[in-house]
Length: 202
Image 1 (tube, rainbow, N blue to C red):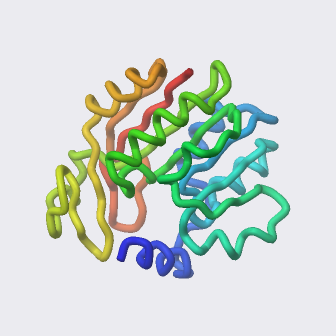
Image 2: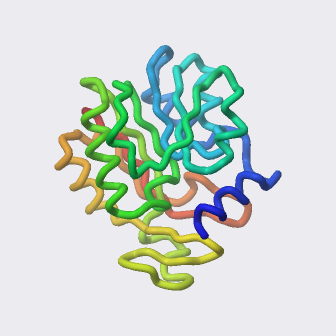
């Protein structure tokens, strides 16, 4: 059901195509021209195209079939992939970027991605993450599907605890250089989610 939800979502003409506030923030503060950035869960490529416009080399990865329609674009490059298999790939990236991905995947897949990111990144490379917090207004709505996970509005969200994921990121070997939990980071329509932003350095 979640897979079908995202396919339908990206087919919807109401999906934003402008870059996210998180992409703008990361480009301004951390990402440099000429770096290789892997955009995990890139969706319709809104942030991938923004980074490319600013001369960042981008590889966008998503499991939605929206990727099939974007393969004809010369830049950025896109791969349709189940992220459960990400540990089989080596990109030697400067930046691994994942916006609104972690709360859409299982905790086991999250663990795999964080460990893989540390191994794949160049020394000094950055992991840039934005995701929903357990303090978000949607927490607890819908059918409970596991710890901090609820099925609501046709798909599951797994809300994340800031202290726990920070500990996991540090255990993987990263040093956290930026961390924020707040509203106002990505308002959309009537929604103003409580989000966590983390930038960690290898």
